[in-house]
Image 1 (spheres, rainbow, N blue to C red):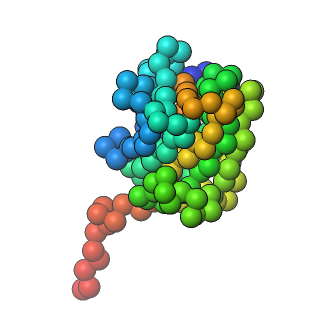
Image 2: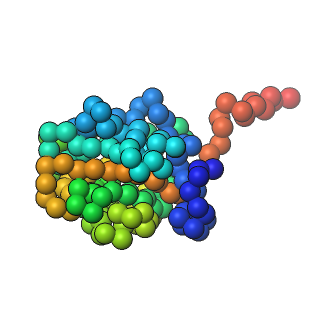
Image 3: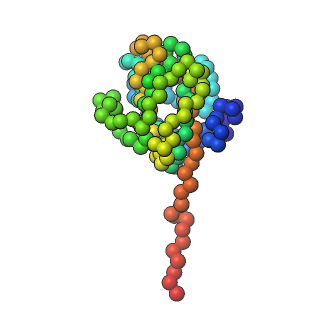
Length: 176
């Protein structure tokens, strides 16, 4: 369980941090000295002095695979008032996206973050679009002030795991 207060997590949901496949996580256009783990990993994301920053321009493209199928309910993104994300697009189960093709696909959902959201207020997603999520791509299109630098202090994903059958655990029934 994360160090967040229970009131931050929507009722009936869990922080999906433990279900992230860290070996496959990627972030395009991140600053080398202010990278994704600062905003996503336990311990780092609670430190107000650490953040994820964009590099060449304000956009960030984040790919998060999960180690099992999840249902994504909501998210929270914390950021500063000026450089915090504004338009955030979510793509369920879309792999190998890049800045050149991100606009070729319709997002599963889009959120316009408010000042309240940037303080950590969770945003509920179109739950029906995020029922069998194996991976999530988050496209931060712009920031609050329209500047060249976007900063993200924390990304938290809330939802639940999908109960699946472990096929390896099944035993073959022998005919007698």
